[in-house]
Image (cartoon, rainbow, N blue to C red; front, side, top):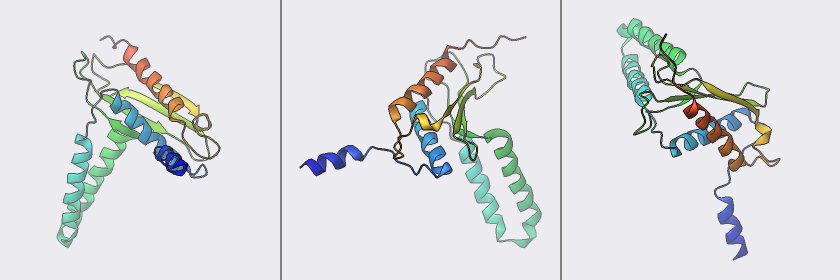
Length: 177
């Protein structure tokens, strides 16, 4: 009986190899996405869908050798979208339902190689909008959120991310110049 209780409590534990930089970033990014969507923001998947459709068109054109130029152009367009729109974004959202702002969020993160400093940034999806909030970010060591065994202490991370979301929501919109 006791073994079953221990197993059931460990099912929700998020554990990662602390020597694997990409696994750490991936786990933190997934958690950020869960936290933001739990606050009522709905994920905007339009850009992802557009990339999937463009990718399908590119793959369909691979069969024809006469379409090499078109393939190169479409692949260039895909790379341009990723470079200009996505950057380090992990989540695009719609505006909160019932809010007066007309822009969603772009949540992005960075965890440079050989560094323990995780940077999380929240921007407006339309920074030129009058209702766009000021960009907010924090940079903290990932060692604050993981135990020595590699278990994510979700409560601490959750508090930090929620504080950043509240910080963004409390910023007054930019004034038109």
